[in-house]
Image 1: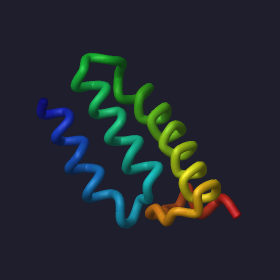
Image 2: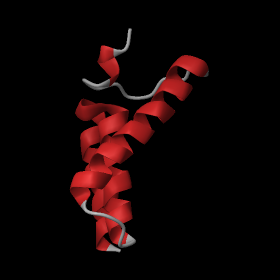
Image 3: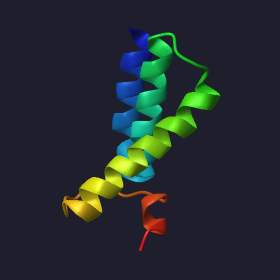
Image 4: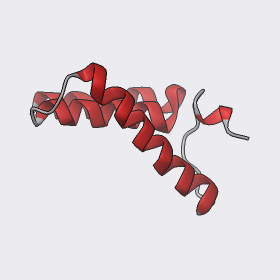
Length: 76
């Protein structure tokens, strides 16, 4: 339970300057760790990739505004 709560706190703290993809990737990794799945060094990159795909669909496809960070700024 603490891993999931820690992931939520980390996402809230990181969202404004790290952007949606990185913050949500951290949340994904911590939640996976809380459920006993994989080490953080594997789940953080996987979570960031999944979150970036979600950001791309929502931001570019649906024209919704999600927090941007350094990773999202690389996409024109």
